[in-house]
Image 1 (cartoon, one colour):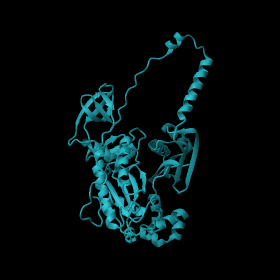
Image 2: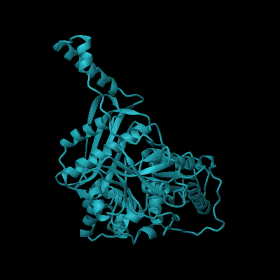
Image 3: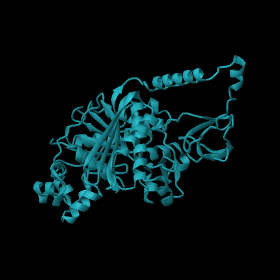
Image 4: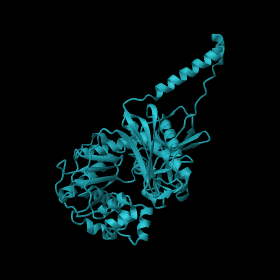
Length: 473
């Protein structure tokens, strides 16, 4: 393991919810929940104000509404989040060629590889400057952890939340981890923690003291050995720059094992949607859908289905994942679910197959029945039915008279809009329109920082005096 804390972990604070608060002056300082608003929706991100009520990510939206009935509930705007993520990743790329994104809002950076830092002081200066640059360019805050390993850097960023920086000096890792709960180690959820507690192990120091053989006996070879290495602060994993992936996947580990089969189906459907979002962001399609299920006893099952051709259709991926789930027994509980797509390509064949099938069906119908005269065919064509526009809560709109705003809600043929921009200092005016108002149109998200596209990377400077360890409030 390296001798300087030159691995940086950045985690944006409550990313989706913070972006919505920055974009909407009327929501700043208030509880905001972002996720699916339907009967099977789940929370994607909750603001820190909403977390005080017990709302957290992956929670069913119905439960969130019961806990925080007065919060603002919004549909995600992934285009905006991707744009902000690209700005953040550009800042990280200016620090080092070795940037390992974990998601839209989280990444590891090897500062040593980019010669941006070589000791504790220089690494800390980079961390302070990065946080200032992120706020200047995006208007949002991120928490930074600095350490000699990826595991410790990630623990540092968690300790720094929200909007802080924690540097863990090499040689102090064991002292830092020792008295902490076993839950601080990655991969230790409630089930593992309870299993260890029954064996008299509740702290990281007690894990190290138990020895590898005892942990293997309790948890199995792979999990026990891995946990013992983490307790000793041993992590030699390098920061790996993003490569041309052979697959795209997403997965979630749950704090409490899921036993409800309906909830499992709901989670698989949500993960499939997130997987397609990443697939489309990479401008790829895939031929094979993969389902990953880790059960209560840590046994992991994978199932796959190969389609007729590459696709990036969320409906197709969801249906394939649902079929795969039907062949998996989840009655004992599920601690992790994942959905992936492999066999990637730069094109999509699904539409070609659909067109071919439609053409065959039309030809068959024509052969079976009397085509009749041209006049009779034309007479049989139905009148086009107007499609009612759907206005999603939180999404951007523009009105010909009142300008830019966002949807607060809709129903009963009406849509309520608050007219405000990210640059306003006070909340905007609320107005209600018919859902088919011709002067109201969907709009693209506005940048969170006015003139941010002109900002130059690395123009800010670190404070003259830096504390050894700083954490967020």
